[in-house]
Structures are given as structure tokens and as C-alpha cells.
Length: 365
Image 1 (cartoon, rainbow, N blue to C red):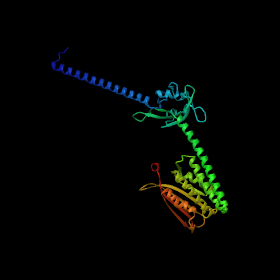
Image 2: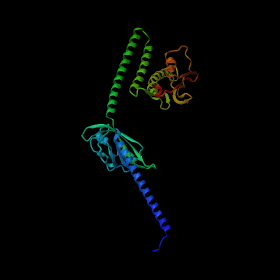
Image 3: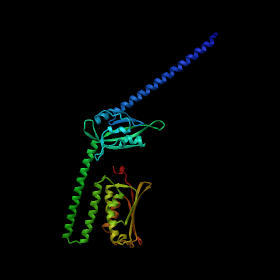
Image 4: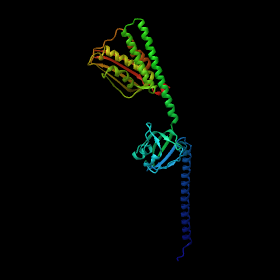
């Protein structure tokens, strides 16, 4: 065996020390990495137990791997670790119509099998003790650092109270609608009897009665929907379809306006249509009306423009006196919308234009 010099032995010892130090550093790094991963997992588990909803996690094949304790509190049975998307029917729930929810209908199956980015459903769930409650199931995919789907997470939310409040709201709305209709009926009766005693012409009584009907219909539609806002197209169709008989063409995007403006629009549309029936384009067989609306941008924000264009009828002549209809389609609507109205009495027909600022929800607060 060859004899090594002291320098060679020192170099070898130094090399061994460096390798040992590198090994210790690598071991320490692995330990730190494992400790950090364990800490993150502990934080995740603690968070899952803190959130006030049920949370379920599944792998890329749809097998349920985890469910927090809130799941068991809600459904009153252990978490089912379903092996695949075909076995989700062990979670027993029903649709609104009473039919059983099938495995493929659950949001987790839709995300796993159909690659949906978001899926949700409301179900009437059968708990482990045999009772039922309404639950909302929401699912979204989980992706790795490269964006590949590696599984999915599901949120289970108890919506029993939400549905109870919604049912109570529907009952109150129905009662309010009923009372509003009764109030309008009483007003119509009082007005009709008063005008009859005053020996007012029958045509005038019918006009007032029709105007009250138009307002009552618009009010009823608002009460039956979200109440605070309504779409221009829906308001126009409710008023104009029965009058125009297909000769009023409406076109425009989905734009919602506050309910008080919707009521003003319903009255204005009624007056414009009845005026067209008496004197304008709708007074002749070939006459037509085009009603369009659009949203535009200005320096002060968004604006809404509406255009009522009559064609194919007699030439429009400016009336000598301002009647009730002109007030409704003019000053009253301008005051309600803060807009500007321009009217044109031209040989080819009457034209009416409105430009108004669009009120957002923030403006209404």
C-alpha cells in the first residue's frame, strides 16, 4: 500500500469534511422542507375546521379523500369516501321536483368528468337520521403549479334558512300585489262614479280607466320581480305588445333602470302608443313604430338613449295645446330621469328621443 504524504492526507480529510458538511446541509434542508410542509398541512387542516361550511376534497379520479368535521355536523353521518364519480349516489339527495339526484348530476362529477370550471346545485339532502334539509353544493377544480387539474374541492352550504326567508318574501310580495290590485280597483271605481255623476263624456272616462290600468299593470310587474329595478325591454313589451299588435318593433340591449323610472316609462310608452293609434303611424294599416334603446359613454359616465320613430303614417303636426299625454312623455319623464327629451313633428311621422344619465346601484344608495 503506497504511503501518502501528510499533505495528501490533509486534503483527503478536508474533502471528507466538505462532503459530510454538504450531506448535513442537505439533510437539514430536507428536514426543514418536511417541517414546513407539515406546518402548512396543519394550518390547512385548522382552517378547514374553522370555516363554517362543509369542505370535501377529491383527487383527479373523483375519489373523495377528505371531509372536514362540519360536513358530518350537517349531514349527520360519517363522510363517505366515495371511490369514483359512479358512487356519489351514496350521498342521498333530491331535486325540487322530488326526483333523486343521480351520481353524474353532482357538481363534483361534472367538474371531474366534464372539465367544468364551476358547478353548483341546490338539493334536498337526506341526513343520516332520516331528516331533510336544503343544501347548496359548489365545486371547482384544484390545479398544480403548472395549471394541470389534480383534483377538486367541494363546499357544502346549509341554505335552509335562506329558502325559508325566500318563501316568506314570496308570500309577502303576493299579499302586497293583491292589495295593490285592490287599491287600484277602488281608485278606478271612485273615479268612474265621480265622472259619471259629473256627466263627463264616456270617451274621457275610458281614457282615464285605461291609463289607470296601464299604471296598475306596470306596478304589478315590478312587485312580482326584484322590485327595485326592471329591464327597459320588459317594461316596454308589457305596455306596447297589447297595443301595437306586432307593429311596434322593439330593439335594444338588456338595461335595467330603477323601479320609479320604470313606472314613469310605462306611462310614457302607453301615451306614445295611444297617440300613435289615434293620430300617428298606428292609425293606418301600413304604419310602423320603431322603439330602440342603447347605452353610451359620456364624460360624466354612462347614459341611456331611447328613440321612438314612427313611419308609414300621416305627417305629424305639433298640437296647439299641451295635453296630459305630452306632460307624461315630456316634463314628467324628464324630471324623473334627469334626462333631456327632444320631439320632432315631421312629414314622415312623429319622432321622440330621450337621453338620460344611467343610474347605477351606487347612485341609488
